[in-house]
Length: 311
Image (spheres, rainbow, N blue to C red):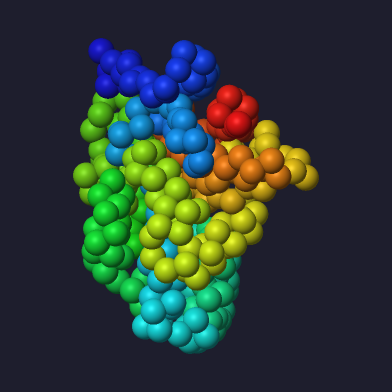
C-alpha cells in the first residue's frame, strides 16, 4: 500500500456540525487526489474545524508571511530602515514568474517595497533580497524566540528551484512527476519537498501565527498592522478567497505554489465582526501544472468553514 493510500485524516472540531464539515472537506479533497491539512478558527470564539492540523508540510511561498513579520519587527525596532535602497540584479537573483524575479535589468527598490512585492505578487527575488539583509538563520531564531515552534525557515526561496534542478535538470515537468511519485511513496527526491529539510509548518502553527498577528500578540503593533495591510493586497484570489467575494467581506492572505503544492493561509473579516483564520496546505497526486478544480475545492472549503464558524 502506498503512503498516500494509507492516510486516514485526524479530524478537529468541537461539535458534530464542525466535525461534519471537516470530514466533508477532507472527502472532497480526497476525491480530487488531494492530500493535506486544513484548519479554520474563529479568532473570537476559538471554535475551529479541520483535519491533520499538526502535520508538517513544505510551505513554498507561504513562508514569506513569517519572513515579512520578522523584517517588519526589525523596522519597528529601528534596526532596519524601510527606505534603505536595495539593488536586485536578475543575473544573480532568484527565479520566479512575478515582480523583480521576472525583470531583465537591475532595479533598486526600498526595503518597504520589497516587502510589498514579496506579499502582494509573491516575488521570490524580493524575498531573497530581504534574506540578504536578515539571514535565514536569524528569521528562524526569531520565530523560535516568539514561540512559533511549528514553523521552520531553513532556506532561501531560490533553493526550491535549485533542488528541483538538481533532481531533474532543467525539466520542470520531470520535477513535477518526481514530486507526485514521491508523494505516493513517501520518499523525497527533491530535498525542499521533505518537511525535515524544507521551510515547513503545520496548519495549526500557521493559524496560531495569524491569530497572534490579528490580535497584536506577537512582534510590535506597527509590525502586525503593516503585515495585515500587506496581506490584504495579495493579487492572487483563486483559492481560499474564490468563494468568499462580497463587499461585506475582507480577505487577507498569502498563497504558496510549487510543483504539486498548492497552499493558502489568511484571515477573513466580515462587517458583522466575524474573524476566521484559515490554513489550507495541499499536495496533489497528479502531474498537472494547472489544476483549477483543486483551487476551487480549496475555495469551497473556505466558504463551508466560514459559514459554520461565523457567529
